[in-house]
Image (tube, rainbow, N blue to C red; front, side, top):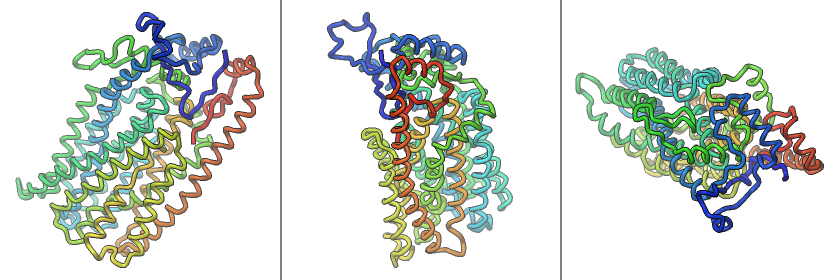
Amino acid sequence: MAVGVQKATTPEKEINSFKEESISSGDLEKHCTDPANPFSEPAVAEYYRREYESAKYECRHVFDPSLVWTKQEEHRVVRKIDWHIMGVIILITIGLKFTSGALAQATGDNMLEDLKIDTNQYNLGNQLGFFLLLSLELPVQLIVRRFGADRVIPFQLVIRGILGASHAAIRNATGLYILKIFNGLCGAGILTTITIWLTSFYSGSEVSVRIAIIFASMKLEQVLSSFLAFAVLRMRGLCNLSGWQWLFIVEGTLTTFIGVAVLVLMPASIVQTRGRLSGIQRLTERETLIAVNRLLRDDPSKGTMHNRQAITPMEILRALKDHNFWLIYLLYMIEHMPEIALTPYLILNIRNLGFSAVNVQLMTIPSSTLSIISTLALSKISQIIDERSLIELLPAVWKLITIGLLRWWPGSFIQPWPTYALLLIMAGTPACAPIHSGWISRNANSVRSRAVALATANMLNQTGIIIAQQVYRKDDAPRYHRGNTILFFVTVSTIPMMILAKAYFIWRNKIKERTWNAMSEAERVEYTVTTADKDSKRLDFRFVH
C-alpha cells in the first residue's frame, strides 16, 4: 500500500471507518470512506508503535492502526470533546480576562485621577506586566511540559485572582507597577498552554475554529464584565471604597473561584477524562479509541512525546532555528498592533467624548459583539476554503479604512457619535490570532516544535503589545494623529508579508513534492522509518498556507 504524505493542508484524513460488530458490511459504502491511513503500511505502523512506546506516550495502549469507525461516531466524539474540553477552556479564558481587563474598566471610574497617575505611567504599568509575560513564556512551557497543564493552569488562575483583588489596595503608580509585575509572573504562558493542550484533543483542521472560540470567549468576557462593571461601579462609597476598588475585589474573587473549578474539571489527557470529584469517565472505551486514533492518523507526531515530558534546551534551540516560522512570527508580532494600541484607551477615548463613567461601560459591548461574530466568521471561512495567508488580508483592509478615517477625517475625536462608531468598528476587527496559532501548530509537525513555536510566537506577540502601548502618548492626545499614522503604515506593511508567506510555502512544498515523487514505494517506506529529518523538514510533510 502507498505511504501517505503528512499534509498539514486539509487532511486526507477523516478516517470514517468502523468496527464490523458495530455496523453491517452492507452499510460500508453508505456510511464510510477510506482515505489514506498513514499506518496502512505495516512497517510504518510498527515504526510508530515503537516510537510511541519509547516516548511513553500516555495513549499508546489504545493505538490501533486497523481500527475503523463511522463518520457519525466521530462526529459524536468531537461534540462530546467540545462539551467537556472547550467548556473548560472557555472557563479558563474568562478567568484570565477578568483580571487582565479590570484595569481598563477601572479607568472609566476615574481611577487614574484618584491615584494621580497619568497616561504615560498607565502605559508603563501595562508594559511591565507584558514584559514579564514575554520573559516567562518559554520557562512556563518547560514547567507545563514537566508537571502538566491540568496542574499548572489552576494554580496560576487562583494566584491571579488573589492578585487581581489586591489591586483595590493600590495607592499610587508604584503600587500599580508592583501588582502588574506579579500579575505578569502568574499569567505567563496561559494562552499558549491552552492552545497546545487543545491540539491533544483536536485534529489540525479543527484547531483554528476552536482557537477562534477561545478568542470569542475573551470578547464574551468583556461583555459580561461590562454589565458587571455597570453594576459594581454603583457601589462607590460602600465601606468607604471607590467603585473601581469594588470592581477589582469582585472580579479577582470570581477568578479565584474559577481557578478552583478548573482544578476539578480539567482532564490530564484524552485517556484521563475521569472527573476528580465525580469519578465519572467522560468518554467511553470505544469513544476513547476513536478520539486517540483519529488524532494520530491526522498527525502521527502527536504520540512522540508524553504529557509529563520536559523539553530539553537542545530541542528548544532546534525549534527556534527553524526558519520556516520566522515570517509568521513577524506577522504575528505586528499585525495586531492597531487593536492592541486602541484597547487600553477605548474606554478613556469614549469617556473623553463626553459620555458618563457608568454608561461608557455598556457602550463598549457592541465592539465586543462585533469582534466575536467577525472572528468566528473569519476562522470558519479559513477552515472551509483551507486558506490562511490571503484570508488575513480582509482584517488588514478593515483596519486600513478605519485607521485612515480616525487619522485624516477632520471630525475625528471631535464629533462624538461618529468617532464612537469608528472606535467600535476598529475594536471589532476580526482577530487573526486563531488562524495564526492554528497555522503555526499545523506547520510544527511535532509536539516539541509546536510547544516552542507557539511560545515563541506569543513572546513576539507580547513584544508587539509592548511596542503598541507606546504608540498613543500624552503629547499626542486627544486626536492621536502621530499614533494613528504609525498604525496605518504598520498595517500597510503586513499586506506584502502575507502574500510573501503564501508564495514561500508553495515554493517549499513544490521542492518537497518533486523529491518525494521521484521515490519508489519501497524508498518512501524506508525513508519514513529511517530518516533523521525532524519536524517540518521531513519530506513526507507539507506546509499549510
